[in-house]
Length: 204
Image 1 (tube, rainbow, N blue to C red):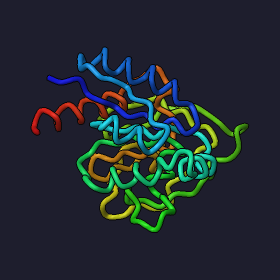
Image 2: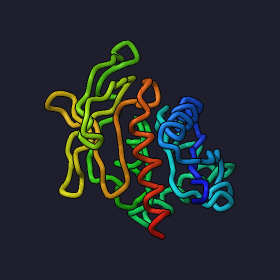
Image 3: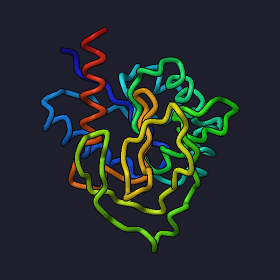
């Protein structure tokens, strides 16, 4: 099988931790990947990725940078995602905000409403065990200035729960998580991305 091309949006945030998580998931799954850093619109066209990761960070900064003339990456990323709902996308923390609340006049890419920084400030960060329904097991959730889902629509499938609260929503193959899976030692959600992508490429 061909090497999977995973596009990693490099606008801002803990991007390199995602590289390590993706490499760990690749080793665990036995599926070869190439991680391609996306900084500007032309990078996406040149990369022609099979899947995309939207990391955490500061969503306001990501919007300013990604919509600015030097990058212009966000509009083409959103177009790429909306063009084909089967394309696998993993958005964490700020990435979940962009998927749920793109603010570009287009429809959200994940069917959920989200409240930015609703879990509090940096001082309110915490780690706890989640029920990762998308993985059918528990998962160590790391929350840092995390957003909060306020509503999941009919096309928003619950992917992770913190007690009675939804902290992960999936629409098609687009997965938005309010926590940081890349900061845990568990590569389960990155394996989900790689394995989902591999299955789609095999079917094509």
